[in-house]
Length: 306
Image (tube, rainbow, N blue to C red):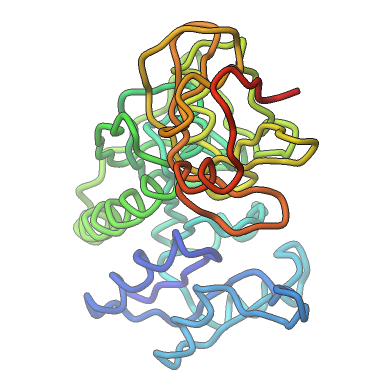
């Protein structure tokens, strides 16, 4: 079976690697164009491209799949099956209908919940107790295709989106191999999604990141965990932004935003309290919350967010 893999970020790497290690003939990899990164804005290849190059797999980086040139590139790979994992581009009908075994997508949620670009983060932001990975046949809608297989996993109370991302990427690779094997044997039983149970997980924006201490502690905690890598939840102290990367639920009462413990960085919320475990002050480095307090000499009773 000839396979074409379409994916871009780190999340997709374990899936491509699993196919390679299992011995599937990956005839081409389609990924996003290189993008400038860092202070020097050097063109940086996507993680999926780096892995493909290591294994001498042809790499294609079209700006769009809707062009005749991109379709010809795809046809030259003679795919029996196309696998899509966080590619970041819409597949037109001509692409969806090309491979005889169809196009299979690996999506980081328990569909039909959390269709869209940010399923990992929104599952945490909304306080879900579990999530998982779904493989599905791709259709023209956004994550609306028939489901093939699912695997679920609990979300830890303090687990961040970064940590969950890494776990789900490994689970996704495991599930993908199972799905591809069944596709070869004709053992898949597609299940249509129930649209009435769906919800949308849009891309994150910086506007989400400001902490509102009037909300319950568990909501603030979910915000910190869900935005752990980008854009990072933040509050304001001394007129500057204070990013919060890790937190823990804590005990205590006080006015929203009030510092309750000047040694362990416990802050009051509308209901309950939260401890800031890892922070970064504007212009500074990321550090433990306790270290930040020692360096800034905050006092009990001070109000954050003003």
